[in-house]
Length: 218
Image 1: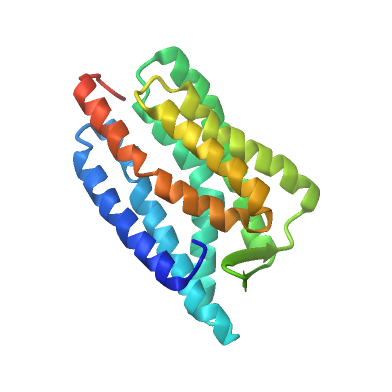
Image 2 (image 1 turned 135 degrees about the horizontal axis):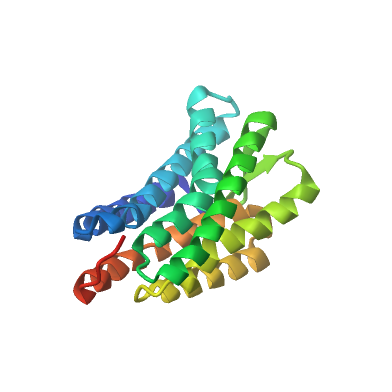
């Protein structure tokens, strides 16, 4: 999260509360993974709060390294496959499920690529102004293609889904991505995850609508 350690921890606390309520609201097994997204975002924000506390010291501690890689593992490895798969699990239209599954496959391949980058290359978190920047030496040319696949894999399933309010979630995520890209390009990983974490509160209402619709999900 951007701004400060206090903002990161406070935001994580609020989002985690929403996450717990959302998980409890999910009664159908097919909803469980999707309902866990806000809570996972909260953990991610907590880890960035740790970075706000450790980076200024100048000493690279194990705590800082663990927090950095936990944050990036969530941002680059977990979300590309978890988000489309959780939407796939909730979808009841067989034709849409097949389409969403293709994006899930792309997300899995992308997650493997980013996992390789996190192991092979270096990452150095740095505080610049009121934001955290994750400076890395990942391949530049491949990075553009990887980011394009990231956007498609994580956003497209939200628009393909027939679950109520899922499209709203997709619209908000898309808008937040464009806003971040325009105003916070250098801090995209940090700021977009912050926006996405706040937006994930919408998931509670998606789960609520799914319950009230009486649809059999799976």
